[in-house]
Image (cartoon, rainbow over all chains, first blue to last red):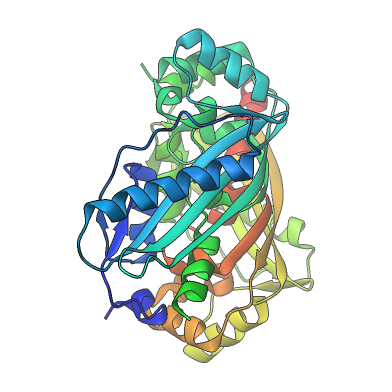
Length: 200
Length: 200
């Protein structure tokens, strides 16, 4: 018996439209059965958009692209997570010096994490998009810590240059306010509540 | 090279004095090398103590008991986590009906999680004990959800009857304020900062 799929009354296949191993792990943790289909989406959209517009536009685009790839009815789940400091969207660092600068600017400071999520029925095209905002406060980092973290290679596939659930990046975070899993990349409570609404 | 052990200048064995698989996973995530030694500690201490007294007394007792078992120098790490609702300490549920009552009282409500941590050098007997407090807000749960969660067996080895990082208990939590890993059972940022202080 699949507890959560029964609870949510989902009787069509679930597709996660994300290549993020973190999102895959989180959906598995909930006990959902799903498969992963990823489509390339142009992420070079206007970064002057409001963060909530930016992440929801990207999550919508990801879900719609995957819907075009399949010819059966499925519930598509997609998400896009961005890190925002002082109103500016921070992407993945592309060099060691950029990673240093990024982590140094997060040090002793509070930033925002937005995740847009989209649910899309590939047949009916019924859609629900929403987002979650969490606040993350870093303690003061010294350069030895930042350099050791950069040497571990962790920053380079992560928006903001750190991961809260993978490695010792966890000890940079003094406090969060909001949903922890939003910071990991998939706000589980919002996702669950949204699916419940979507199915009713 | 072990990044974090170098950073923290730890050159003696590390012992985790806990049988919790969650704490073990978290220390591994940080990249620490350690072994686990557990001693039985009488947990039937006065529950009318203040929560911060209660959890730090227990974490101290756990570390001291393990120190008695070994004859070499080691850094012992121990912790005790308690869930507090309306000033009352909530333990692990012992029956389905108790688990239901517990989760129902957390529903649509905010509770506190305290974790006491102790660092103890088994040779010098130098000790540092501290605690972390986080706030956890549940959304409103319906009885179908609570019953499905109880049927999964998850509540019975967990203070407060839920796990935030193991299963679909994660979707009960709307928001946290404080340290996420405190709620899991080991406040990583406090642990790291405490070890840094302890070593200096």
